[in-house]
Image 1 (cartoon, rainbow, N blue to C red):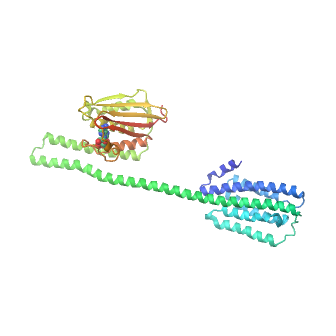
Image 2 (cartoon, rainbow, N blue to C red; image 1 turned 90 degrees about the horizontal axis):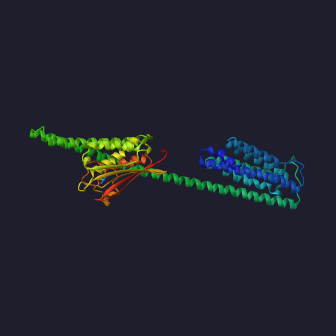
Image 3 (cartoon, rainbow, N blue to C red; image 1 turned 30 degrees about the vertical axis):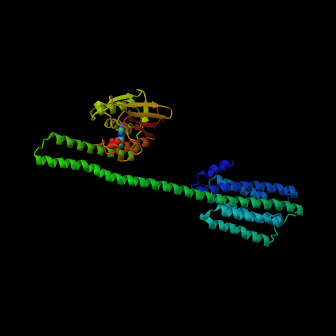
Length: 430
Ligand code: ADP
């Protein structure tokens, strides 16, 4: 039952407010049990059911409060309950006399008011707590003749006093503990928010320094081919050898490098900006397309490409993004192939388990020295003099794989070869 009530307040937005609403539910349940107990107890001890009975009224108040909470009117329930309780206490205390200890409950209602209204509403909490104090004073000073006092023997009064003072203590202690708990939780929440903000700041700093590096390297990488081309044009003009094939081929190389660089920047920006387009496709077909497109890649004819991928392996991923990654890894394997070896090769393999699809691009190229392995996935990082590229390829590949929910890892040994493995989630793999 308590659980069901808890679900009613689940949509209270503010978490501290939700905790206070939950506290109200506990208090009203305690109040209901207490009112039934009090009614039975007074009946058993005093054996007198004549005269006005306030305990059943308390049961009604609890019922109305619970009903209001159930209807989602937690704020109205809170104020009605506290005010009704205070007023009722006055009558109950007049009926049973102060020797019964019923008037102690003013302390409990004051503590509940302060606990149920958080710091944001402390004035309302204080007003209701003051109402308890005022009624306590009125109760102690004014004799309300219209309420017949029930006679209690000293042992009956003693017993009721003990029960009521104990209950007052328990309720007040509960309220204080709850206030501490709320305080602790809000502090914990603040710490968590602080941690989150710190993480976001660290992320922003990283992005900022990446951006700085990007602007610096991009301007360098874009200007370098242009100045080479411009230099070559000047030489050609001076030498009057406008058709010199060497110069033209050098210019072509530079234009190609620039074109490659711009394509990489576009790949990077597309990956960062757009959401992946997940579709089912046949992995083998994608790899065939990439292998075919490599035919005209420099030195591709000197490297043997072996594909060990089952023809019926379907993937559910972003095909174009995966094309960028595989294309990058395979062209790297050609660019950094070791032509002193008898048979330079690239092996592409794929396997699927229940959770993941594992793709591997392995070569027997020049490999990467340990000093560089940790950094090759960084932006603009080149690990060898042989690189004519921008050092963006592996950085983009890693970003793309992560966008696809996977992981890109590498194992490399200098002069032996490198193996890049892509682990993609197999969700909706068919
Ligand atoms: P780029 O090829 O443009 O230099 P990448 O980001 O693709 O940039 O690669 C970063 C560096 O990692 C390269 O400069 C190269 O030294 C090294 N590398 C990448 N792939 C391989 C590979 N298959 N074999 C050996 N070295 C590699």
